[in-house]
Image (tube, rainbow, N blue to C red):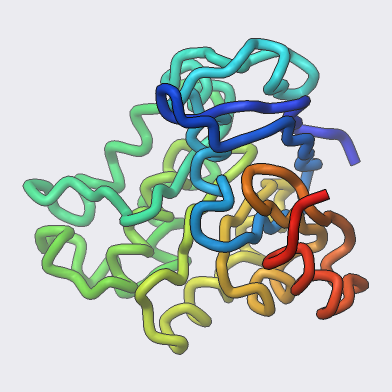
Length: 237
């Protein structure tokens, strides 16, 4: 499989606070990759740096081999990367459908497999509630709107930050059950997830961050619980 996204010795942080220390990571075409780690490990910082919300050197982030580190966020979205942010970040003044349609504005050139009808087929409850204010929905339904909005840009890589945070297990299962439909046409997914077992179940490969460094990586199915626990809580190598 060809590599879509890669980071090379990625550093990053907020002002004088450094949160990432030389992170190497790759996501290939048509795979689900999980990024795990405790609070403060640097997971969300990595996503924000990759998507241009935080600065990086050009050669520290590549997209299909092209340096894109530090590029403007709108350019990165236009290349085919979409982020479902932690906390969903819906526009409270807009309806469900209006929030979804905003996602389509980011892509005017790529094929449009994902549009209103296909998003509603993936999450039927959104069609039922399409005229309602987005923030009147339950937390799980708002998460579906956030995913649908990102899909409307028809990305090659969908990045999801803490999809399960604060949601009931049955809702989490419903959201993650939608993943196979996303990758069946070659889309890749990078998931930030604190629930380690869930992350391993839905992904082919994983990276564990500990204090801003990759402490373990490999095939999700073959990693031992002991190794992951040590990488998650122990001192990063």
